[in-house]
Amino acid sequence: MKLSVIIVNYNVRYYVSQCIESVERATQDIDTEIFVVDNHSSDGSVAYLHKRFGNRIHLIESNHNLGFARANNTAIRQSQGNYILLLNPDTIVAEDAIKKVLDFMEKTENIGGVGVMMQNADGTIARESRRGLPTPFVSLLKMCGFTRRYYMSHLSWDKPGQIEVISGAFFMVRRDVLDKVGLLDKDFFMYGEDIDLSYRILKAGYQNWYVPANILHYKGESTHKSSFGYVHVFYRAMLIFFRKHYGHLSFLLTTPIRLAIYLRALMALMQMQYQKMAKALGLEHSEVESPLYCFVGSGAMLRECRKLAQRKGLDAVFCHKLNEVDDCNVVVCDIDSTFSFKDVLNFARQHSGRYQMGTYSRKTGVLLTINEIIY
Image 1: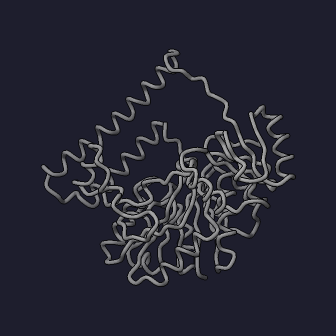
Image 2: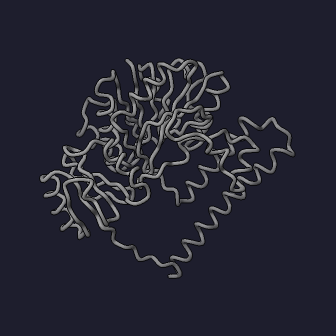
Image 3: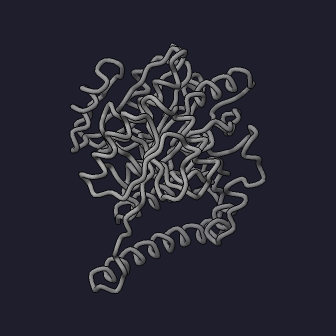
């Protein structure tokens, strides 16, 4: 077996379904197995995935929310691939992305792991596609607003380059490297485990690389980043990493970093509390503007989407080609018969920051954007 793709799902059945389909297209000529670990979802994910994909995927149905690290480790232990791809459920993989990464890994000596160019839903490039290690000095710089070193901004986006930290949204690693450095650290429930694994790969003498292969990442559709739980888990992960790898350093050196982490967490919680109070007191303008959708695709897709737009009261225009798209907020592409996922990602990047990208599939009857699921 060449490749094992592992996706952890938690209450995002439509996003993970689209992710799986993009992986299937990207691995048509690669000996691949796909594992989905469901972390005790309550949205009917398990039944939905069984019905949609059957035995095309290995579905592990956990009775508990294991967290990201433990869930991935469960599938890694069952997998057979020489290469392992950890992939977020709220991603879309371009048809040529996985092959590009595998080809690069096979011809590059001493390589441990690879990350890729992650695009946001509006086509902008996510800076966390490439990161440096959060050493005490780099962490302090970042918390003070100096992020060039942390995001390795000196590197070209269009050429491969050595990096230090690979994002867990798309983390390709060789099995023999994992055998040497160990699996994901289960002390990290969510967030931070990718930094920890990247660091252990480097400490074992391997290299981590960035490759300009494209994916779209909805960035947190599988989490709730405005919740108190998110703040607790995120900043706890920062502390776990810091204590694990830098706890041996001088008290005078580590204390400012720990205080900065606690301060940032406190500020985030206070901001959330203020926003909730302002909303409750009517001090915050809460009116949501209805976006203008532009549906692009085949005649059959457009007929279905006209009915959907009428039924849901969406402001919408319709066209057959991407070069006909003009004034709108959300571009919804037909991903069944008209456009490849690569087409969607290329269009988004060419018009970076102008449109939010969405997809519509006649197989599922679902319209997906970063903000909405409509069916």
